[in-house]
Length: 435
Image (tube, rainbow, N blue to C red; front, side, top):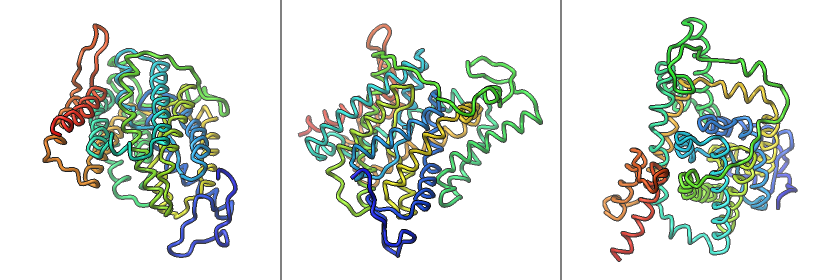
């Protein structure tokens, strides 16, 4: 079932304990409103992450809509989910850029990840979901998520924060309030509100205090305004985002491939959450979900967009509204595509000051890392067992360092890539050895 929804009840309201299932819907005006809420929920992360990675945020928003439609079709409408920009690649992408890689090299590496992820999804579909739990037990998936988050700490500390430390600090403090104090949808878009606050703060500081002497986007210390809207004034209201093809470089591909582990773990967790929420057994569609995520990544990166993943934010919307209808996700996808066709909006997003990103990324990276600890806690992982403790600890330090292992004269495994290999290989090696 991909299209065709039964009207739930009278199409207007839910009685206590009822849930609108994926193949049901409320009245179309209500579905449009719920679809718009899904856009609000995904919007902050979907444009923040490509912005941090140096990719076109406008294109990311548009391709998130395309990838979501593909996802829903591949899972036959059984798993309601929104697919947006993935945070898991930020650290690896920054490492690629630090080594001289451009946009095409970045998206080429991400495209390969999409192909591998789609292949893993097909294998899971054929072999059964049990293979996931054997290769990627909670200690491994939690550790990989943790090292991905903490392995990006140097990006916030060395790249964004020095551009405007006081704006970064105040933006971070404001985001604390938005995320930690606000409830409902305002809380879910707390990161987006933090970005808006930081943007307005930077603009007001320019008016009052004038130019700032700090590193610019090239890393040179210059005197410049925090906010530059020249590109916004020149951009068209309607048009396609900037598109480009991928370039494939082995060194860049090796850096991002370990993220496949985190994406599989993320998809599995989201599918389980949707199954519990809808009361349906969706394990049979686990492989399709991973495959669909891979296909979405391939399509998005083939035109210059970022890699995609399923979004927990939108699962939160389903929990709040008790509406799991896939109709809402199709509506949200169409709205996202329309947003992507406004270049002026994309130029405004790209004008976000570096200090603002410093405050926001400090929070985001820490939250990503702690999600790994959450996986351990929920699965009662025994960290007193050396088989668990030793490889995880070593892998995390390799990522945070970042520790580098020279392979050739021009290529080295380092940071997140090295940490993931150490963690995964070390864990399974110790298990086999002890047995």
